Image: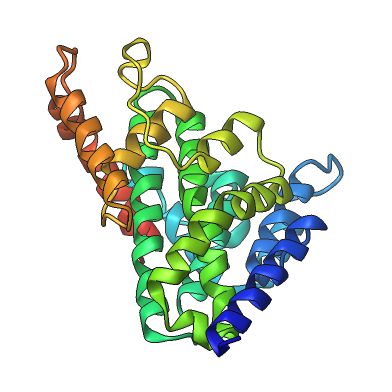
Amino acid sequence: MSEFQDELRKFSTAIEQELEVRELAFPTVLELSTRIRQAAYDPDISVQQIADLIRIEPVVSARVVQMANSVMFRPGGGALVTGVPSAIARIGLLNVRTIALVVAMDQITDEKSSRPMRERAKLVWRHALDTGAWAYAFARQRRREMADAALFAGLLTQMGELYLLARVGRYPAVADNLMAFAEISQFWSGAVTSTILAKLDLPPEIVEAAVDASIAVPEGATWPPATVVSSISLARLLAQPEIAFDPKKRADRTAALDELHGRDMKPSLDEMLERVEPQREEILSVLRA
């Protein structure tokens, strides 16, 4: 057995065992996101106590304050906030979890692995950020609460592959073979994403939207996107950069976009994209800070 085959077997076995017991090695800030959710459902906990929890990770604290002071959350030029409790009150706990997730993924993409894997991780995460941003912008046309959920779920669409990219660094022979990793990722990423989302305890419809890697054209009945699921479905089609290795998936994506452009809809796809583009750019400026 070659070194590559031996490491490939060990890598697959390790992931399979983790999935079997539904225990993945989460980064600290993902665990933080879970603890924030648990705290949010405790009727006896205060905003100050949640703020103390967030301060465990200073980067998360800083980004929470930054989001609270962004144009999105003070559109009328309201007062700047300087403290974490005030920032939490302004943006809400779901957006706090979103920031914790963003910081975690930024750390994962900087994992010391092979250069091809680091570059792949950065591309995948950029795609997830853009998916979340588009989903947020579409859902924001409906209501703010739906937009926050669409942003968080959109960021999770590539969680499985990002987790595998972080783990493969322990298996250098596999990490040096990007095409082989792509096949592994295609096989395991859906199950890994599902396990992560179960850990985060998201609603079933959000789990379904984030896990399903197939390209689906939003149905006319949901045009413009009227739900978190349909917002993410459309966002997934538009998100850049393109990350599919499979030529068929690339072709399916192009065909789906061509079909949407050709539909007689009000508003048209181009009209809607022009309308929501500023909100997409606003949220991206916060996520990529």
